Image (cartoon, rainbow, N blue to C red; front, side):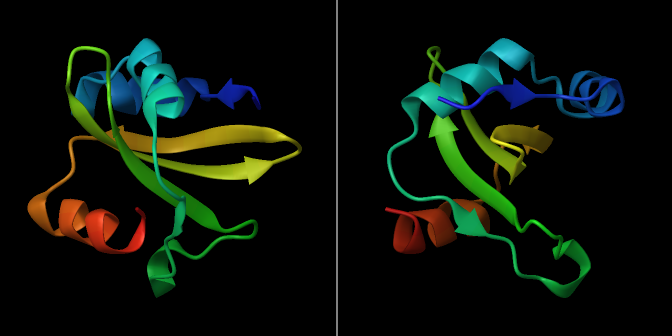
Length: 95
């Protein structure tokens, strides 16, 4: 499995804004079932593409993980509890 990279800037945002820990993100990567979706909204387009999926932590917390795959690693851009629309999109298109 590729390494999960979280920059110090993103780590601060995850902690202060979303209250998400690195261990939870790692658990979601381990627990995911389905496909990574591409975030193709104009304001979120990147090169390489921004990918995302929704999965549960070991405690059952549902998180949306947003990342880019670069140099053989997953670089986390964000992680937070998804809203109903995001859950519906993933259920319909990611599984």
